Length: 200
Image (cartoon, rainbow, N blue to C red):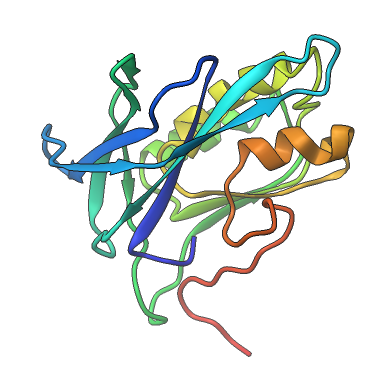
């Protein structure tokens, strides 16, 4: 959230592959634009030392307020189409945020409603303030994999802004730092972004 002309798309694979996103304005089935990024190799600190590849691609040149559809992947396979609306520009609007914390993998009671509201365009961004999955590193990070799939119906459609909580501290916050992409160069541990009307 913050820069209405760009969006970072993040996903995970179990093998090394290209990091590509094709996208275009919605409505429409065509994806005339192509953006490339990179994949970072992540080795979980658990006993199995599982390796994941975290892909990050920045979409640039977006039109503020415009809806886009996109797919991510490589020649080895593509995701289904997702969509988002680029943030509005300027300070004469009030963004709509969903703000929550403490969302576990098991029995996440607020998630069905959050999915429903996100799919209907209720929010410009969500802010997940700490404590993910209980915990991202559990069971050699398989819990983290399942949690990321579970929030996909939200995080693939709006900026999913995060900050860590005490549940993310294992292995020096490595699962959190690797799986989420926040603004700046602080490994998503702290950042600042601004959207809409701001008061001093």
